[in-house]
Image (cartoon, rainbow, N blue to C red; front, side, top):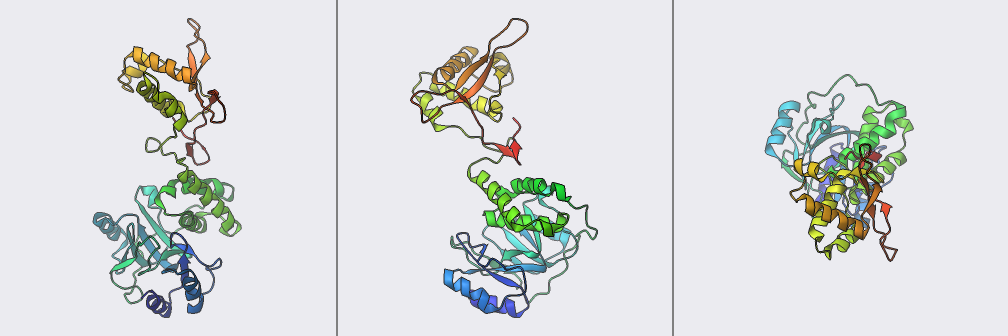
Length: 352
């Protein structure tokens, strides 16, 4: 039973906290990073909310948190950091437990789907916990609190240059955007940012949790609204009204295809002017339509109010240019306004 496991780990000296919420991973108490909590303070909010989840605080511990349960990845990590006697299978991946030692490397920065979590202000969901969606944390090797944990091998003993106070917000925004699609909630993202703040930021005590909560909330909203820009590995928005307006046109499929291409190439920059050199577009392999079909598609986009002539051709000095526009749902006719793309990178726009 979950209560027996919590009591056993508490008796073995592990600092614990009650978790719950919609994701089953949110602390049920505001202040949880201080002294060890008594069992009654852990069980009471769990009982009140019907939670079957608790957290293990990582004061003196380090947990390698893998996003996927891949045997090759786990073997690679244990070859590098030492064999862990305690493995817990998570709904997405695996937790490997160690004792903390030195400064942990940033494995995300190395392109690995792995975090190393540590510190009194960090936690992981404990063994035998179960989330409301049925996701379970099942021990698959060893037993936490019984098997002696080794030091995490290979951690840096000398602290790298900290993130200066003047750059902390910007750097944490960047980290949030790198991690936001790899976490399950804004709360988990905030906890990860707290670890970065505590380990890498200059004077972390002067950066409050409220600032991290704001960054995590903003990044999570970007994810929900499909506004996370990752170069070619990203999405861009397309208004349904635009598709509806083009569906009934004789060459609607061509016009939709051209609109998608233009949004991909130019939609990130509001009001951007660009030429439409169809021969060059075809030569680059961006489309396989004839120039005549492309010109007809361009005229259709202009007719329905999705493309506007921005600059007329002047022989020998200036090419004809266009600008993307959008349709306004509150107007009877199409209103030609510059499209505002929702793609972002950090706090700025993406690169087309």
